[in-house]
Length: 262
Image 1 (spheres, one colour):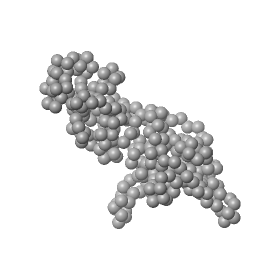
Image 2: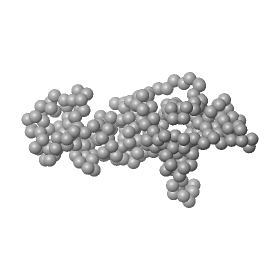
Image 3: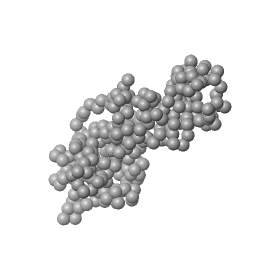
Image 4: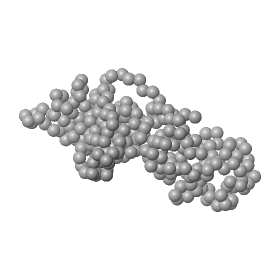
């Protein structure tokens, strides 16, 4: 089975992440020695981001802008590293477009190029600093050049490794399949009787027991209607359950996660 992250899903997640981390943007013009010509624009977000270091900079030629770029949007390396912890599926072309759109929506400045580092490799052996990281790739993207963007596909085994290795969340053993009444935890006995349980399983397929740090939940996909509840018959949204599992919003569904770990 392939898990599909659509372009629309990725764009929405990336935009919301930028909005959450940066918030309302502000900027400061940096001038040449003549104090009339703008050399660059420092872009700031919330005051606690990177100790008020500019997470983004717009460069103008002929300074540090890449060739053919009039407004080159560049991300600070530490900020890129921060973002990649939340968006491990770094689709460089899509993310570049989202960056350009976000800056335009916030500041009214339309950039035509984007540059940032990604796919960070932790290598403490190269430094006395145990938190040191080094980049292996740099993305340079020119918005004006038309490029075809394909959907992103993940095989279940790769998705599981991504969640464990990149996000640091191991859900092994935290999701169990309920095939019959004997698999149902005792705490749910007063919620659903064995006969009704068998009816639901026969009609819609298996239930799943999802174990979070706070509570146990039952989940069943009933012809597209995702039913999630606890032993007190309180219902939960899919996004809330993903949050309880300790996962960031990267566009995956509960069914995707179940397919990877069960």
